[in-house]
Image 1 (cartoon, rainbow, N blue to C red):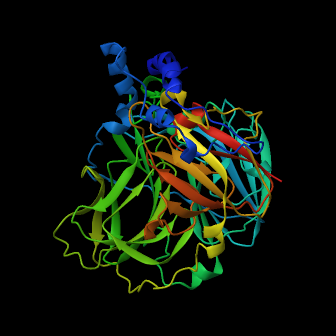
Image 2: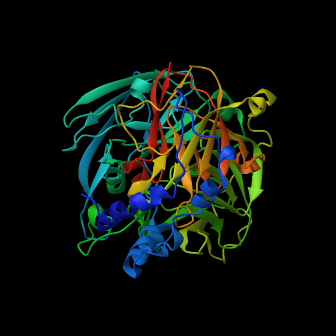
Length: 508
């Protein structure tokens, strides 16, 4: 079931696509060369002619984009509820049992909201594993609908990646066995069934994965889970009058945005921390909303990690932006807080996301290591030719990659195992000017080589699996797959993914 916006979007699809230049591909599925576009094609990029559209059509078109040009404001957290902390789940005899299930959760006091969760009623545990160990994820579907288990950011064989090919029917169980082949990082997992990903995530299917390695154990970093090391899953939602999720009623084809923030599933959360340095692992688990995180007192914090691993050294900053699917780890120093002024994590609009309560009796003397990692984009990678070109385009139900929408029976690219290729992704502005697309590749961590021909900012100079590409931007990625199989690549605005902004690469 789709919203009324879907009907309108279908009506304007032909007009939008007529404003697109044709995308040509070679036998390997490579996109057209943008530099060879004619002046007419470049003009088309600016969008279609709106002069013959009715006022109602123009208004509807603007509404489709309203979720990102003028998103619903978020509620301020009152801080009345202590933040829920996900339980840690580690392998027993090499096995991790993980079950998708229905449940009810008391998000609002005295009200039971119907939700989905992993090993519980809402969200899931933190699966903690170690580099080099062989583990089996024993997945079980106790939902009344098909689902998949996608391991977002995990270097894993294609047959276990959990894309739309690996459907698990209700009541079914399947083992996913692999050897952990990547360094310390904060990853996550969520469903990925075709046509149902957005709604299942919206109802609560999401959990975190911590990978540890020998290097991370030696570093001087806050690492006591629930004491000075916290995971924070940010999700915006809307509830109906009965305080229930009704995804179909609020679905927006250009990205579903809510007005109620949940952090780890907690409404109006606060986090009690010590008067010390604290590690916060941030996940944007929303369907479409992006967050610019900052402290309300304007103080700096340190970023220590990107999606897939530690930065080379801590980076001081006053704000960090994460689009859907992205993660970052930051260190906030509460030791200088005088205990009188209120301190909170806020967003760009200064909505209070997470107030902090300082427990002055809890302290530590952690001095953050100056050297954390040895990540580098090599000269060889910088000088590699572009071998795969992708063009992201469109809005609503008309989103495309290289002029095509997702077809599970079509392989869009092929790539040889263990060989690095340069992917060039161009976000072509659409009729309304375009929007940021968080671009995600399954089964690997990539390096950002350049953004519009320039070296990426230091905050992005680390392993990534999702990158925000703004309208008009061109990003080059160094991509290598360590395993064989079929992997998805797509926009991580979940409604865009559902509408076809997704393709497949076969690694052989």
